[in-house]
Each structure stands twice: as structure tokens, then as C-alpha cells.
Amino acid sequence: MKSRSSRQFLLRSGIALIVFGIAAWIGGGLSVDGVAGSPSDNGIGKKTSSSSVVDRLPADKQAIHPHSHGRRSEPPEARARRVAAVKEQVKRLWMVHSEYGLNWELDDETHRLLATLDAEDLKAFLHEVPPMGGLPSHTFLRLEIVKAWAVKDGPGAVAGCSVGHRIDHLVRARALGAWGEVAPAAALAWLRQEDLPGDLEQYRGPMRSNLFRDLAKSHFALVEKELPLLGANDRSSLLPTLVSAAAEQNLPVDGLLAMAREFTPEGKMSEAEKWLFMDLAAKDPEAALGRIQSAEHLGEEERRELDGIVLSRQAGSSPATAFDAWLERNPGIDSIPEAAGNTVANAMQSRREEMIGWIGRLPEGQLRDQFHERGIRSLAGMRCFEDAVRLSSGISDSETRTTALIVLRDFWKNADPAAAGKWLESLPPADRQLLGD
Image (cartoon, rainbow, N blue to C red; front, side, top):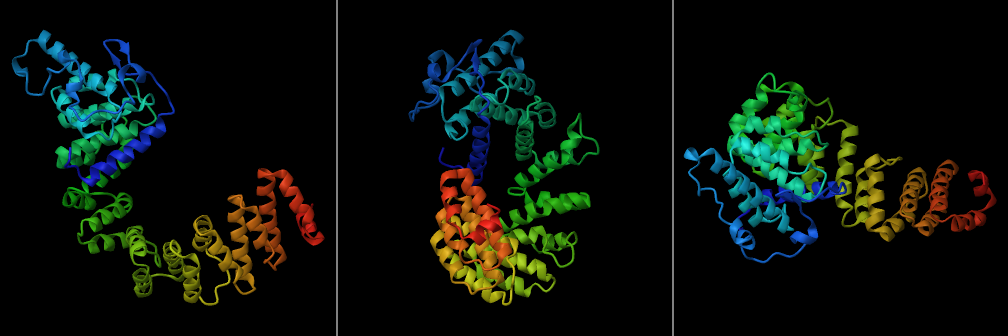
């Protein structure tokens, strides 16, 4: 299908990544009429043509469509046959198709077929599909069944979709999300009730977060009205999500940011505002620096942390230029903040020679020694031992030098004991004494 929003694509892709990571737990194939399917005998893995998914099924399996039955007057025997045939057709679709999770044609046909089933049929179908943790198709199909069930009976699907598997939370989130798409006010009201059914009370927080995140993209006003009804902790934890959604939709955020500051310690930037700041730092680092300077409520420690965020964004294109600008903004600094240390490690990964050259040009002193030590630690972790040796010669403080050499020795011995031994033998006696070798 051509008209699909980017939100749907990202959602599908996110689920795809999760599920294929789970696919290490290998299970059996989908069962049709009691016969287990397999990739080899059902075409999974083969490239599909542009013809209809239904057209590729046997002719006797193509007759079931959502509006082909007068179900209100349907005799029980006929109904049972129809439901069984729908289930079989859905299973066959998923057995012969290899692009589940990212194929809109398969999804649309699955949705049409599942829409012909009642809530109780869908509940039974869910428990007939092999459990999560088997083939990826099992998980994707279960998610489609759960979503169809939730459209027919939201409360029942959310409460009844668990099968005791470790990723039941994913299924539950999809059920609640599907219900929220068709009846957002009802889903929010259900979550608001004092006592949730069964053992769902322990999952109220995660369920609310997932639902708010989904609905904030399509029904922001509804979600915003829920905030005053929540406790302080729940409000505080959800505000970053809402601020993010509002900013993406170009909606006003001042009220949300003011509410977030109520839960923020003095001198700190709220997590909600920090999300906006990080986005700004990625798009316009100079504007982000201006935001720090104009924020009178920030303490010095918080300013340094935010400045480190700007540094990390600027260093992506040129770490030497970014670190030079950072030193100019922080005259007299004599130690490396954690954020700057992490940026050294990232720069070593992407622009190693540039970063090594910049560190080598620093004037002697405590700050230079610390940059050398952080650089050696990063290079050793990357197994760039010769580069780490080059940096080690520039450390003047004996304690910092000892720390750096120990890190280098341990990484090198673990990776290549023979080469590490030769290096140790080449060290001056003073260094060998520092290392205890």
C-alpha cells in the first residue's frame, strides 16, 4: 500500500528489531490442520511477487472475506466451519509469506480476515498460535490477532492476552495501543479506574506510559487533560514524553515545561526541557550554548553537563575544532568532566588520528595528562595498542601514567600476550617498576 505514515513504519521497524532479536528461541512452524509448517515446504524465505496475497493461495482457500456472511442468523455448525476456515486461511497466509511485519499487503489481508471473527473467536485463536519465542512469524501473527481482538473488546484483550511469556508486556502494549486507536477516551478511562482487573495493577505505570506515548502523537489534547488526574510521580515521569510529542507537532510546550520544573531540583534543568535542549544541540549547537547562558536558574554543575552535551554534538564533524572551542568556553579547567571523557572515546572511534593529534598538541599539565589517559583507555579498548603506546609517552604525572600503563598492559595481554610481553620488555626500568613487572 502506498499511503502509510512514517509513524507506522517506525513502529513496525521497532517491533521487527525486537522480534528478530527474540528469534534465537527457535520453535516449530505454524500448524494448519494439525500439520506443522516449515520454511522449506511453505515458501518462507522466497521472494513474493506483486500479485495479491490471496491469489497465491489454493482456489478453495480464497472464498472468505469480511462481508461474505450474514453472521447474525448463521447456524452454529456453519459458523464453526466459517471460523475454522478463516483461521486456516490466516495461518496459510503467514506460512507462505516471508515479509511479515513489514509487508502492508499481508497486513491488510490479515486485518480483513481477522475482522470477520468475534472477540471470543480471536481470544481462542490467540491461544492456538504457537507461543512467543518460536519463529518470528509466531510473534507477529500473535500481535495482529491481539490488535484485532482489542478493537472488538479492549478490556478483554488487555486483560486476557498474557500467556506467561517474558515478552507479554509487548503483546499487552499492542493490545492497549490498538484499543486506544479506535477508542482513546475509553482506553484512558479504563486505565484511570481505581482497581485494574487481575494482576494488571502492577503494570499500570508501563501501560500508561505506552498508551500516552502512542496517543500523544494523534490525540495530544486528550492525553494532556489526563495530567492533572495523575499523581506527582506519574506526572513527572510522563512529561518528557509529552514535551517531545508536542515539539514534534509544533504545539506549545511552555505550560508543560513549567509543570516539569515543579519536580526539578534547584539549579537543574528538567528532563523534559533537557530533551528539547539535546535536540537543539544536535541541530544548532550555537543556539544551545545561548540557551545555557540565558538560563539563569541553572547551577554551575548543570551548566558544565549541558556544555558537555553541546561538545559531543559538535565533535561529530570535527573533534579537534569542537574541543578547542570547549576549552575556550572553559578557561582554567583542570579536569575532564564525564561528558567530555565520553566524547574523547567516541572521537577515537570515528576520527582517531585527528583526536590523537589534538591531544598531542595540548600544553603540559594536569589536563593534558588526563586527556592522554582517557585516550589510552579508549585506544586500548579498541585494540589500537601502537597508537596507545604513542600517547603514553606524553604523560608527565607518575600516578596518571601508571594508571594508563596498567590499562594498556591488561588489554594488550588479554588480546595478544606475546606482543604485550615484547612491549613490556622495551619499557624503561622506571615504567616496569611502576607496573610491578
